[in-house]
Length: 489
Image (cartoon, rainbow, N blue to C red; front, side, top):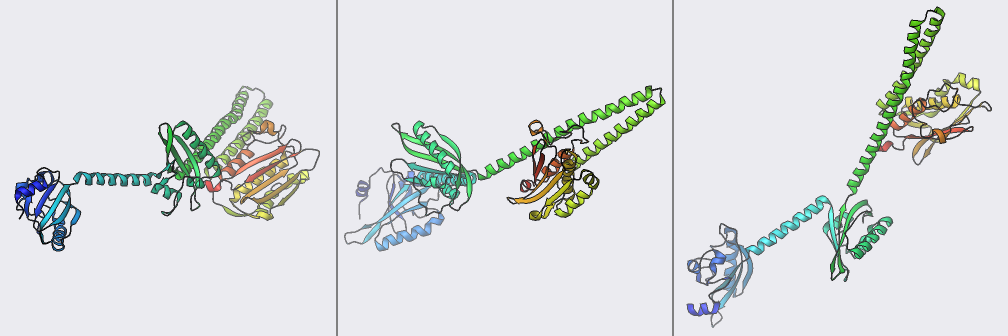
């Protein structure tokens, strides 16, 4: 048996570890000073008790089995981590080895315990922080990468791999990122890196990429470098998937532009209606005053005739305003399956007298797009207004000719109505051609409402309208019925 003094001399009186000699069942025969720092009890209080009983309940079966195995096999056990049964959470690292007699038999066990609570908590905190950072990166779609500029060693975070849609087996290199950029973005990224290395100033830019799976996407990239002795040695990058944000910005921009167009159109409409109503109303007021003041019956009769004419003009104007408002209000009118040949024929019948009187020739070719999904009432209103204009603004030196063509261009139905009439001075009227009450020719009965109404109809249904014209030669109106229809929901 080893004497107590010899044991203390061998093990040392002062140690940062708790050291025990004990039986296979954990009963302590000797405890070196230092136990209190590890187990919260001094050496004297530990002697005669079981170190296993000082461990948490769930740890005891595992430790009992390990100590017994060390005794029977004469082999070391550990290191193992275990929790004590203190009120405060305490983790210890245990290492146990057998103490042999002169014949190789196991006398007892020698166990060293080290308090590793702080280390475990640091590891847990790091693990939690790493998990939080990973979750935050996934939630915000932010990944990070690093390149050692000397060795070219490259690291990509999991989120970078997710954004670029590469698997875990993909091995990135210093040049790998460039393979995902579009040509324009690659040039911009190269320029930003050159600026970063030259100035050590952080670079921010949005780049377009194509992922490994072929998906087009946008990323926001932040670049910075680490220097040593004034020389760049490592480059870091953070990238965020902003594809959804870019789409939302584009959608919002489109909504703002559409609302701005509607605001401007309504502002123009209100201003023009106010201006044009003032004339007939003032005229009626003046004529009524003259009738009251007139003493001549014949003169009063003539004034009343003018009042009736002004009232008719006012009523016509109000009808025009009502038609324009109805188009704005009923912008979601359902489509009809319109037979273009039938609609053109039906509209032309309404101009029989004008066609006969002017000897106008109207031709059409709609074989490429014989049917059209569009509200019939709107389509025929468009045809009626444009054919009416072509029959109205003619020249005296030639027979009016009107040609109607409907084709498919880039998947969109497009209508062209051309004439050889008087034409429009686009240099003078180009900016106002579709405004309400704008007329381009003197001495005619046009009221400047038709083109405004057509534009309202076409745009409310998701299309657009353009015009080409040469004064004295004729005019062509082109309508794309569905250019923006998929964007208007």
